[in-house]
Amino acid sequence: MATSPLYRALVRAAVPLVPMLLRDDRQQRAHAGRRGAPATLAAWGRLHRDATRPLAWFHAPSVGEGLQARAVFEALRARRPDMQLLYTHFSPSAERFAASLAVDGTSYLPYDRADDVRAALDAVRPSLLVFTKLDLWPELATHAAARRIPVAMVAATVSPVSSRLRWPSVEATRSGYQVLDAVGAITPADGNRMVALGSRQECVQVTGDPRIDSVLAVVAAVDPADPLLALAAPAATMVAGSTWPADEAVLLPAFAQLRTRHPAARLVLVPHEPTTEHLDRIDGDAARLGLPTPVRLGQLAPGSAPAIVVGDRVGILARLYANGCVAYVGGGFGTSGIHSVLEPAAWGRTIVIGPADRGSHDVAMLRATGRIDVLPRDSAIDSLLQRWEEMLDHPDSTRADGERNRAALEGERGAAERSAMMLERLLG
Image (tube, rainbow, N blue to C red; front, side, top):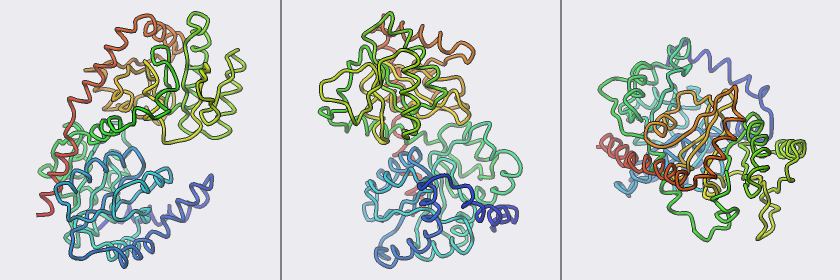
């Protein structure tokens, strides 16, 4: 099955425009990485591809999806230790994560153009191609299928409001979904929406979310002596992770009011993008509210206990959630949706979010079986202040709510193993 002419026309028009949209060095580096990916993969194939061993090529766009992919390929490799693993990504934020993986090779994914895809497949010669979550590239998928390479998707999830379900996207990408030999959907509703995108009903099964396995494993592997676990007294601290300015416009005023009644309360604030500009804005907002000067994590003196600690680097949030009795997860006052609520749930923390969850499965799961509070948009500061005080005044209830969140995740274990079994069947 060939990729649709509409999709090819869109790609031909879009790729030359990419350089005009690049905002910073990271994006420019990513563009160069994608353009150079066919050569990178060709060099890897010459030096490292062992033709006597099967190879699974996993693709995940960024870090969140990478955690899902990692849980699955680790389970697959445990079942098939003879297998080589190649991991590709699309986002520059995944560079460091990719470098940390126990795989045989990593690269940016080439742009989804026929010549680049053919060159990559010639170099890698995969036995299996696996996409993660929803990041399917039709040219790569259809070319792999034409070579009789099994094509699969793990952790498949489709928001009911996803633009992929609407024209022109659904028409442009349908051929890629039609060639999937196996789809591991997170929920039955996700499976139905995968069929709407073009996947064959008989190829879809519900396997759950392998990221839950990954997050539980990450938390279990944290060294109890890690200094990042001892920044604050958890009983009096909120850890606010992956925040944007719209989140901080709620958090900081609520914290300023809370401090008048609970002077021992503390806030660990971890911006999603800890740029110098963003950190300086937080300092200015705190000063205008009469709050103590925030201390950046990299400047924190051992044994000190400032009222506000601000995360000034990425890659540490999963550990920082251990410091609080409650977690605030950012993104709910913007348009892109809530960031991951799984890490604080894995630590057994009760969770607060903004109103725009965009149909998040994780949020729905925790609202049903755990404890997650959604702030109303029109009275967010007052509502956060009230809930924050309740959690500080009733620590036993707060602890019990957090334990319910942890139990909700424990009940969802096993998705990685189920996904690996699905993939192993494709290998024969």
